[in-house]
Length: 243
Ligand code: URA
Figure 1 (spheres, rainbow, N blue to C red):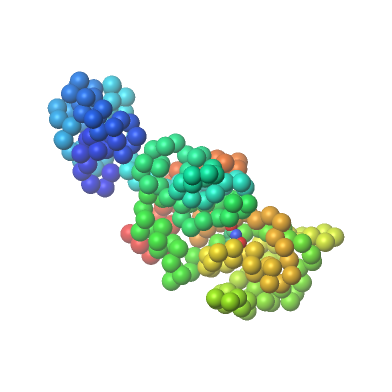
Figure 2: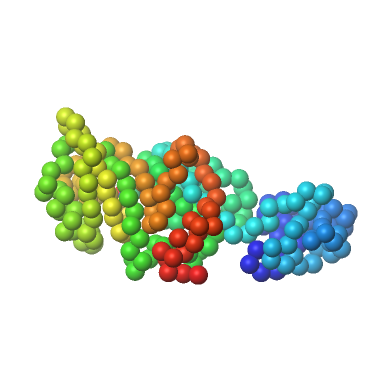
């Protein structure tokens, strides 16, 4: 917790209770703040306070930063009335704390997606000024040749923009398929697919391997997620030139 928060508000933000339920819990003497039984639900819990409910310590962190291995088939969105989103993979507390995706991956794209409660950090990581590198592995139709590598490097013209220099490293060419690693420093809509399409290749699958200083944790199966370590958060903040 970065600042003191009213205990009833805190409990509702953490999806533990509605504010009126929190009020009853406090009235019934079930909540302690730093070892003292709370007496009023309007009481404030200071940053870093140890809070217990019925004697059990609750995870009262309001700041959350998550790395997820996005599976294909889910939308990158906070919510959607029709389709499942990556938020459905997280406990509801992440939604109540507004832990939001940093940018987006297409529905059929897999791999590393970050989510954070720190909107300012997300904003900075996505800002063109910060030039954050994103690495993808793409499986595409056709044989990628030196001309395509060069076009990625020099920039490709689209109706509304010219792509910034991108690196294309061919990994495998088999028959009529190629696999390559692509590093881009911007995040235009369908960017990688459009760059390949402009060079005559259709992207068959796309997986993000890294975002700035963070690499996808290989221990995470598609759909798995974990909180970032303090070192990873520091590295992100440094990349974003923030905090
Ligand atoms: N580029 C794309 O075309 N799609 C993604 O999901 C990410 C980058």
